[in-house]
Length: 363
Image 1 (tube, helix red, strand yellow):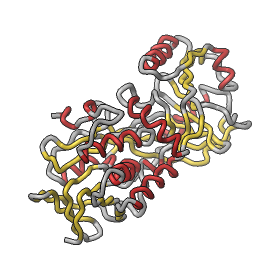
Image 2 (cartoon, helix red, strand yellow; image 1 turned 180 degrees about the horizontal axis):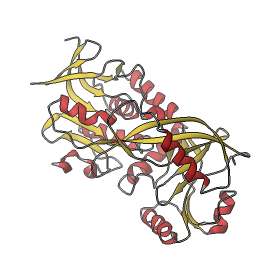
Image 3 (cartoon, helix red, strand yellow; image 1 turned 180 degrees about the vertical axis):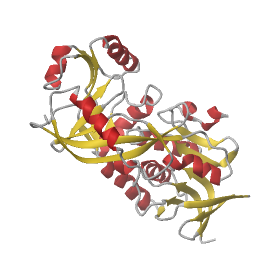
């Protein structure tokens, strides 16, 4: 055995980094983050076109997003953007239902008619007639937030080992004996599964049953269009979930809102998905696309009910799930990490009730 820790967290992306920082702020636990890649944040965290918007992820995720907002603002990682969810003629009821669903939980949303849409989205094609505007939506500086959590965890004594993916996990009387890809072997009192798309694989290594956490590919392209991109353009989303786009440094980031099932991997974009994104974009605005400058893809991982999974495994009190955070893990990071740290350290209740996210719901 090379070392012993109270808590070993598998995965040093946003989930693992934020949780390590939150645990460290609550006590003196010996914490180790193990990361399979050469640097943390290589997969979902490093490829996110993240934004903070309270309606993203559904009503079950909204409490985590709302609770995270003040922390993200205090950290200085938010830039005001606004979000506009739009519908075609005939989808007015869908837009109104979308607005009503989130107004009911306190989200500020303004319904817009065609004239209101034209003010916010120049050259919008005529068949887009209604929208719901969320003024609170912001861009997130993902890299700054991730580095903040890594630095905080380091100051509090947590260690980070890269190129040290988990190869094996043997249950012991006091926790776990873990074999890592760098050849080291460490003891852990609690094993935390923050492995994103690899979460079920980590559970299998530990001899636990998987929860059915599945990975899906999401494509993003950076495009240049004829004419300048308005600096105050909001994040624009389709009420039917077929696209979103937002300005970024004079260009546009565009996604076809795809969710293609994928094995856990180093995701790469498919040309057909990029072409689909451009086609859908040109059906929304009269901004001819001059070129696609960059394209990438990342994996989003969901539990079967599309809610995150936070808590100790019912069959093993030394195995903790912190996974299934879909595409909303960045915007919910502060509240999710606080919730999980409270569960891990047996602290009192926090801002969000953990019951809806407990892994026991799948047993």
